[in-house]
Image (tube, rainbow, N blue to C red; front, side, top):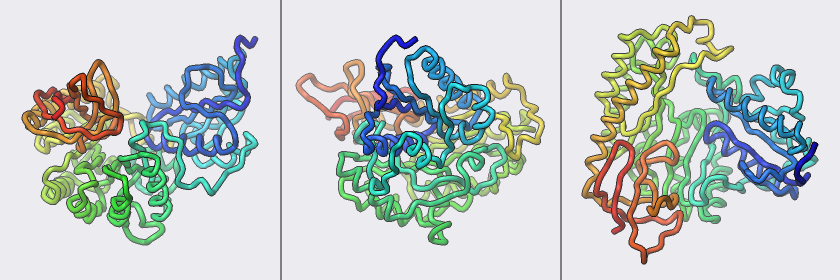
Length: 437
């Protein structure tokens, strides 16, 4: 029985997973608001009659979080707290039939490219004239910018092509238009994202066009930082580094998931590269942009990974001293190439190998951060917390990287999205501490 009143024209959008899902939710929310719906993102008020869950289906832990969230809102519907529940995104794209049988309380299921159909179900029109407009869920001073959808890479462990399809680049003119709209609304940092950033342009322009795109975005008035995420090492367009070195508003930062270093593992993962080739690429990147911060991610416990492979990876990461690094346990995903392999590394061993990598990285990060002590850094302020202003340098992306925690005199007021100069006085593994200059 209903215990509270809900609004039939109010929608609560719940987003799970990566930044690409955040982008999709923001587009959805913009369309709904243009159709006279009242929209909130991850609201805790409990007064929305409609809940739309944008799911992640990448690895087992993400799938479980998505399923738990769907069940939670399905139970709320049974209790009369929600009128309708819709599910979209990667998990729904991949497991729609199985989930619809098991969770009948969900009113409808939609895939990753079903936005027009979802809107039609809500008796809303898809408004093409809204290209460039976004209802941001991030703080107002930064935004994710998805420049392509899908992926053509054959990585053995990855289910993204199953959920997102083949690579499709967004035309450059549309991206620049979006950037101008965001800048006009106060966005100062653009974080470029895609399943494969470095493939951009090959499908529609017949050549890699990431460098030209970044150059054109850097010309947009009001954009102070442009950050590159999810670059693939094979076929990396080196001219992007020239733009990074030339343009002051292109951050000296590159997110490039490398996954492993052992040649045997790279071959089994179908990465199309070798340790030697990655060494040359990393050397070229650091040579062209000496101040760059490289973020990478790794996988431990891929089928067939031995202790020798793991030690090879440990030595390699120690040698390269990556400024930022994340590590995950391998997830055995149906219908991927690796699913036919024997998942022969135990979960306990996978976890211990991840812990070893991250413990080593904590030491590397601590050592690298000491070089900032005594320097003055330009910091973008993200939030106030515990009497401090917390922000990031150009070497750090939100949510995943280091932060700068700044002591500010009581008579000084900063706003979120302001840039501040901070003298760094101390450093830990993952934070810098400083005083406002």
